[in-house]
Image 1 (cartoon, rainbow, N blue to C red):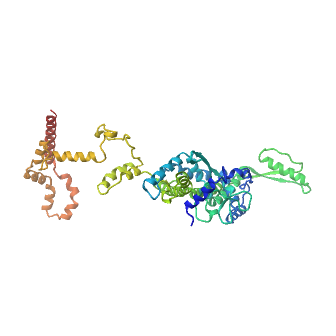
Image 2: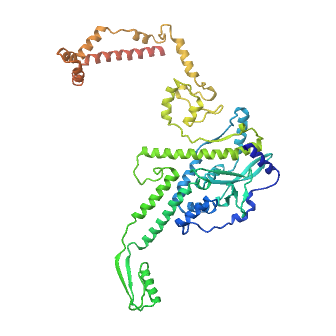
Image 3: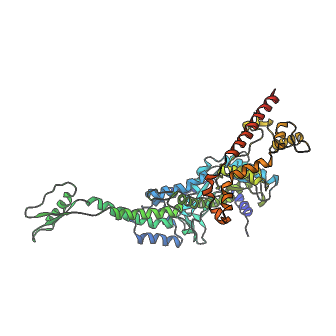
Length: 532
């Protein structure tokens, strides 16, 4: 079985052997000027079926020419596909060390990351690769440059899908007017095959689903245009004698048609024009068909409609559910894209420039489509969770979407922590530990704090039990009276709401107010004395 390293070695041999130079498509000028008549003009169900059947049999040129024209001519499909593709640009990405781990894998990943970041317009390359969502595949051609001993991509150029063909063995090849085409150069291409749906190569693209609704929508638009031309106009009926020549009949027909736009015309003498009732009708059937097609297209591309259209009424919760579906699709797109970038960009760079031959050291391209947690909820839950489990700091920062501080980088601190920042701040956990140690040192064996004798006195004070009992008896007197009259406990429980307004809490409130007043006054005097 041929491994990735074996394929890289074979491609590198041809790459260094001087058997080729520049880009593979440079010598195929005929492709650049290849003109194929518009396939969407006059498109019929029979013609569309013939194009799709030919693609299933291996002739994919007509199909992908049609797909490109569909996106050019249908603004709704273009907008929805653009949303799905450009959503990939909002996902943070990183290059992780290979599965072997260790300092060696980290060094390779760091070197490759630097090379990838040097690629001009790298985000545009991701957008070009996402063109495979609709077509099923996207081919980007390397334009290599040299930086000393390193080979770096000076650019990655998207080539139209109708430049390619399927060979008899099912492999993708470059069209060069030969039956089998040219085999794609190793280390010369990124070929991203995107499975928007399961099926054979020709059926993997999303346009296979969209082309039928596109066709129906074009019929609908054409019929609607004709309807608008005659809506509100009266029916014109021309009459001519039996011996009228063909030329005169054509003149009458021309006059009838001119009345629909010019309100003027001439006819030979002896002919008549009658005006019948104005043409009636409604645009609703056309718009219903048009909207039905666009709703289906939105569902096929984004998985939902509430994130696209606001014509209907939908709850916020339902909209959030639909958005979750869209995020699932985004995660799938990102995963497939990351696999192609790992195999066809990172692996060649690691092999060419770092001499990596161990598959375990090959770095991985990773998208992170997860959304940061709600900071308010996270701030409330983390302290409680930290009481029962060990939570890594890096994980908490990732969930909050807050990067870890670099060495010596200033960080935000609470005002209560003073003006310490940078190197003067306590390490995580040390502030709480120091406070606990200080409290323990100031506390005597009995558990009292010697710095606050007034608080100790308050805690040691005892309220006479007889006083509290008397106050409670006065307050609960209505309940005791009902119980003495023979009311059962179950019935008494049901009468609590009725008895509550008759309870006298005046004496208990007075005692509580006096306690609070003395406690506050004593605290103020003690704080003032300590300050002096």
